[in-house]
Amino acid sequence: MGQKPPDAQVTVTNFPVYGSDLFIPQWIISGNRIDPRSSGNVYDWLQAMTKDIFTSASGDRATVLNAISSYTIDVMAEYGKTNWQRAPQSPVVINPYFTIHRTNIPSSSVCLQPVAKSLRNTFLHEARHAYQASRAAVAGNDHDGDFLVNSIPIAPTGISADTTASRTVCNQSTDTTLALAYHGDSVFDQPGAPDYASYAWEMDAWTFAGMHDH
Amino acid sequence: MTIFSNSVRPAAILSRIFPLLCILFAAPVFPQGLQPPPHRSSLPLIYGPQTFDWATDRGDYQITVRVYDNDSRVPNTYLWDYEVANGSFMPRYYEDDFVGLPFLEIALEASFVDEWGYNYNEWFQNGNGFYPSDRNCYSGGPCPDLVVILDWTVMGFHRSRDDAGLLPGQTLYFGFTTYQRQRAEVETNWSDEFCYEGFPCRIEWRTGSVVIPGGLEGGPVAIKLEQEGSTVISTDGNYSEDTTIRVTAVDPLTGQVLTTFSGSVNVADLSGTYYRKWGFIAIFGDTLRRNRYLHCEIVGWTCRGGGFGAKAA
Image 1: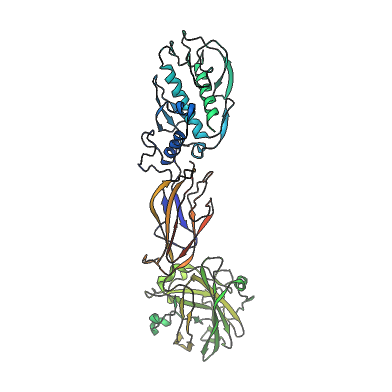
Image 2 (image 1 turned 45 degrees about the vertical axis):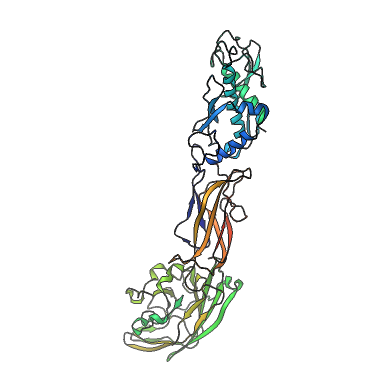
């Protein structure tokens, strides 16, 4: 975890090799900017795959993905993270070192939300956080500044609503769901204890990604 | 390969590269169980059998040469098999030495030393007829520039006082592998007088050149691996990292391209990292997985292909 694969070491098994074996770097960064949304040193394969994720999106999926301003890569425990800003777009960070990202294969559900294509799911998940932030930037939509909003037009519409209605939320650190209600838009709900607004943010993002990553 | 090459034939050298030496005394110990290697019968014979007579004033020997293709233990090699039959040569005592045939030596040009492969001597009682330390010249002196010596000890005790060596009516086998070569000379019109501590014995072995069609002319073969161009990401939906590799047959000493070479080259990845999902190096229309290899058919001088798979961290 946290390192690209070693160079391929190509050799010949039935003749002597003239000179030395051929070492071929893996996970190259050619310097060609394949995906303009990428920032900094991003592996070519990740740029190519991400570019296709964005260009193939339409409708609600495209709208939410467009909340990502740029992406970088980093080594971290999480699949990704969003440095959200109260603005139309926010930058995200992707951890490419999970095998499920390189191969974009299904992985275990989180809080009962399916993951069909892992890298696409991670981008949609982080994009949803960026989209949440963009909605919080809309005037009058987040009076108390807790990133729970009065209106979020793209489904799911109720999970991150800043209301006193009970809804199912996600404690992703334990992969468990629970029912929580919040204080409404006049009282700041803490991200952690005692209010756990972050549980709503995460459930909203997992649900959206699970709906659109296939 | 040249065996007893003309270039190393001066009489001063011959006494050090004798094919059959006899330096023994005391009671003989007779070898048992002489059989050719069982695998040979299944190999294609590409030369021989050709028998060369070796006549001396003490009796005669016959040496039969057979060359087999593609010894399975060392792929793409020739197996050079020598059968030595003692027709009538009698060991005898001379001044407390027993004069017989305890071991054989064969000389190869030094530049070919690296192509020696499996070798054997069925008489060698501990099961191994050749040691790297035997790559020197008889009498322990430095080898001439173009000659190295392989020894096959007949009885297992190099120049032992207890061995009489090969006796009349007995046959032994020894051999080795080399790269596939087109021409080998097995001593031509060679003769010399071998003397041991004043004992005269006339040794003469007359043979002819061994020419094997369809093999390699000149030196052995090495394969040069090169990357062609840059690695690119595939557009087939797998996002594999495609790298084109050029595989070229060259002379291992000079690097010169062997334009007439044809053959199957096996290419493998030793990095030990799994390729996941699209786990392959699709170089030549096949799939490379861990501990497997691909074939690259070289016709003319080179082949190429590409398509490294998605390697996961």
